[in-house]
Image (cartoon, rainbow, N blue to C red; front, top):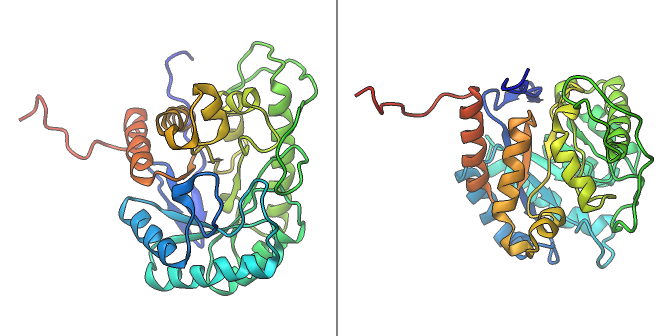
Amino acid sequence: MPGRVPPAGAPLRLRDRVIGPDRPVVMAVVNRTPDSFYAPARHDDASADAAVARAEEEGADIVDLGGVRAGRGPRVEPDEEIARVVPLVARVRRRHPGLLVSIDTWRAEVARAAADEGVDLVNDTWAGHDPRLVEVAAERGLGVVCSHTGGARPRTDPFRVAYPRSASRSGPGTGDAFDEVDGVLDDVVATVSAAAARAVSLGIDPGSVLVDPTHDFGKNTWHSLHLVRRTQTLVALGHPVLMALSRKDFVGESLDLPAEERLEGTLAATSVAAWLGARVFRAHDVAATRRTLDMVATIRGDRPPVRAVRGLA
């Protein structure tokens, strides 16, 4: 019905903990890389430790540690990726026991090494390129992110990507009007649904299986914008929905801004997706994202105001 608040998304459960049941979850980005697309996210060992501490202070629930740039760049062998991120996982686990730890990798051997040091979640941004990755998550009792890249291989950029024209869609959360851009939505839903089903069949808790439409990966800007609008369709799958929107190219192209100037656009997209039920948000700007998500949750009625005395006292 018009004017109704969209249904809340499925809560996130990791290692028997329910995270943020009354508000969306912030996953802080800490890249142990020298070449991330956003310069403030590039860290060596010392600055990575400081970034994790700052993220926790600013309200992050999860810290997502990555050792390889997502896009094109110098090749990083698995041993080097492990050397970059696994000692950091160990330090975070030891120094920040209340903070959940995610490893951003598409390689099973990296996930296994991180699991040995106590990681909680495997963020596979390359859509099961290594099919053993989800098996590692299942064996070690970890959560897993099921993503979508339209078949793109790791560390490649999209070029003239297209998706088949969609049949007309209708029903809750999808809208009644035909929209040919729904072809990308159909592909995302089919891909992440199949990956999530496999993860659950291996024994992973459905609440620990996140689905991520993976904006920009294997998509043009029109595709990524459409996936924000159609967040409810992903929420309806019944798994926690992860949105990795932070400072991405679809935001930059929408506003004609470089990565350093994309915060407001990111927060606008974040607000829309949170209103529509997305549960987890991967973010470079933790404090701003935390406040934005808390305000959206309060407007939705999921979370009460911290203080409400105006007109009462």
